[in-house]
Image 1 (cartoon, rainbow, N blue to C red):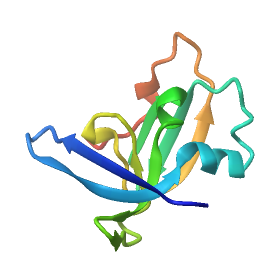
Image 2: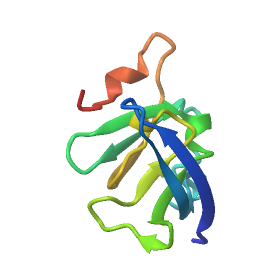
Image 3: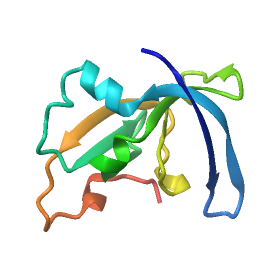
Image 4: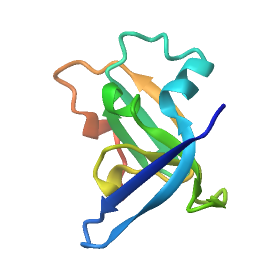
Length: 119
């Protein structure tokens, strides 16, 4: 899969800004490659990391996201990459992504019930 260049900056809850120039593959391309992009009824994507950390984002947000494997020209080590980069709050970026799961949530379901943010 071709890697794309992504420039992102995030504001952490602590007030610290972080970001960089990343290279990675579009989440949409990954889902298409493994044939789960055909799940037209999906409303959210759950992104899980090594350990218990997981976020749940709307599918529209996820389809514009990337799985970054490089930052500022350096390959991310396995304990930090790939990193889920989307237009979300800094706490919903995910390092060391291990699983992507499309979900069909009922309008009455809260996506936060599918997350484990560790705080």
